[in-house]
Image (cartoon, rainbow, N blue to C red; front, top):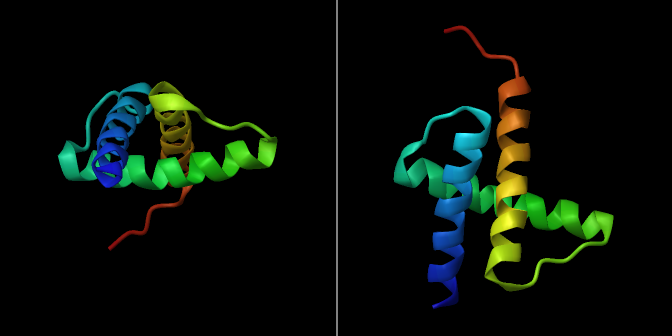
Length: 82
């Protein structure tokens, strides 16, 4: 059951991050990937700062902040030409 909540928070965080940074969604799978990686990144960054998330809303905020950081980092990477 915990994995289901983690996945649901990941989808929501990925969607929110996409809306806040780019204005579009990445689809269900894309939002899940961005949100899950963002949740891990956000948890790491919040831990470095000395903050902790409690409750569902706190976890969603941490995951969304992490997903936004991930998207900003990805947009700054140079694109390779084929």
